[in-house]
Length: 420
Image (cartoon, rainbow, N blue to C red; front, side):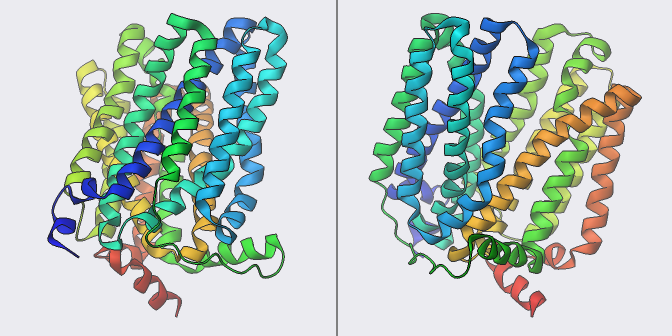
């Protein structure tokens, strides 16, 4: 490791990482812009809330079906061409949406069909993106690279929808989809310039696809660091998330209206971006296991404060802290999974990780909504915060290896010692 590598901000001088992150940010902007514009356009054409459910379903089902075989494929073949192909298909989808945008209600069924294809592309793009990063940066800079990646992705996910709304108001669907098309094409062009400094030969296929993926599942199950990390995130978000309840709180508890709702949603995002920026400059070095448990506990406590608060500014502060804690947890989880996983297994492990993340977000909103319908919004939010704290306590006892983990670099050895 050179002194430049070790210095704070050294990752920003890594040309391959800068090119990769630029390509990824451009593609994420295109993804976020397209997501908000498709939803707005479909609802504008149909005026049916159920139509929005179909927008999500059309993308979620192919991702659910293809994530596992995608992970297997990514472990067997070069990852850059797979990602480039996924972005090329996404660009094709943007072009088809541009063409359909001039067909009014008659084009809605076509939009759903395009979204199915788009969901297929995203199933391959997600695990490929996560698996490429360790092949680009030195291992000594991987934790910092993950922090920068998390911060930039969250920033893009905030700014992308805002930009999409402005573009749609200015030039309608035609202009917006052309911008998305340009974003995916530019991402593919920039990706071609990224050099892989640490790529290993693809794994030789052995057995059937489901047998190979079974090997990946058994690998995760036998590694307490990986299993504890991704399952902790799954249950913490599934049981403790309050984002789905924000409209109810804004209207019935805090009485702040739609402007206040926007501020509440942005408070958590601001906390996430702030923590991500700090970690990108000063990545964690010690006590990473206990820090992750502490971050998830703070996330639960902050959500509990929000649940009981009747003051707008206290609620804003609680969500800000929850966002900061969530970013710390996301950063540590991403780093531990990367450090614990051999390159030949990354595609399958990242596919399972994405499946857990998707399930926690989708099912978490469903859990929050049904709990609010049964018990009321405040009891549902209180219950969620308490359940998160309960999960942290249980996981701290069950996954002692993860609790005692000191450095990211020790993750693989800790898992091997435990499994041995």
